[in-house]
Image 1: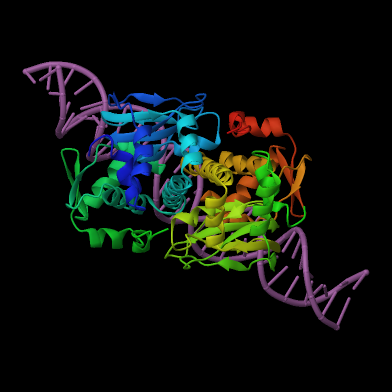
Image 2 (image 1 turned 120 degrees about the vertical axis):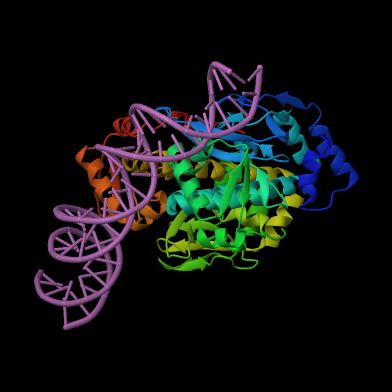
Length: 235
Length: 235
DNA sequence: CGCCATCTTGAGGTCTATCAATTTCAGTGG
DNA sequence: CCACTGAAATTGATAGACCTCAAGATGGCG
């Protein structure tokens, strides 16, 4: 995936784009930057911070509590716009952390607002993108609020498997168990225990920062995954 | 609050509207309907369901799990558009439940999409509205994922106090403890215990479906509420 | 080969859920 | 005005899920 087509490709899954629209989107992603794993792209409460489109690698948004607790709000994969929802606020709502070495492109706020006035159709697509992130958040709320640890972790794994679009049983999972815990509202220790529990059931296995789903059907059944959420359907 | 100005008033908090924009919004809210408390406006997975703008009363969106567990995703107050985020999907993403007797106006999907093409500026405001709902969801994730019950309930109470815009210490809270529990990922029994715990600390009190915050400052301190989230700031 | 972060495993404790029995309360009809 | 009723809230007892602390194993990387 080349840098220029990064966001374009995400939007083309939603609708066909004409050349002008592609050009507008391309202009947003002019200066791709590299960040090292562990680097913080943006801190919480930053004034007038840019958005970032993620081109390569994994990142996440984080909110910190006064007591030092951490909550991972979203895990970002290439093609996503990070912190898009902060458009309604003057300050950034969360910290952005590079989980691997990444390539990302800062997008000044004004530039996005320009798109809104120039292309109503793109604006509507941005709306849909935001709505999909919204849907991911709601499934996370259900996971954390109402599902026991094993189901919670299973759902998370299935979600990532789908979102990575890997067609193999196996895919790269560059998340520490500490990050997974902070995403799912559990301790890293309990992530470890739950992980081995799923391994003992022969549902998954891990080698070398890669995760393998041994039996997707059984895994889905085990954690009561509702396949209805697999195909979101058109706008 | 008259029916016609319901959505308009919400938008006017974000930006000034000209007459044409007000007219466009007003046209959306043509047929206000009444629903009884406990009535279900929309079931999960419904095809091509309309949106609803809420004019009077309280409502919420709910997702049900196969085992019968319930998760309340959002609590809606007058002026809000319910289930706005389902715009990215062909099916409704959650059930809509009237918590009190309410007045609401169904808005066909096409009508909203019409607005997007007619008024880019209103589209942008809808975007901001969605982003704010997004922010409420993320605070909920942090509450459920990383805060103990007492803080969680305290944050919820403070959020409602702010959102109701009541300038008194006391405001109407027509939520059963069962609904509160399903919103905060805890059992109704534990909501009761936590509630009396806050009462024993003289932070709150309740009479007759009304909740009184005895000492907002102490309550905020007790549940480590970060005042930074009080003023979201302009776009 | 050795280092540092990550992961694993055990023991003990805390928080919250569940079950079940009352009590309170709002609403209804006599 | 009061008794009746069903829903909601309270309270106690018990169980289980998950957390914390701490020690040891693993594994990627220079």
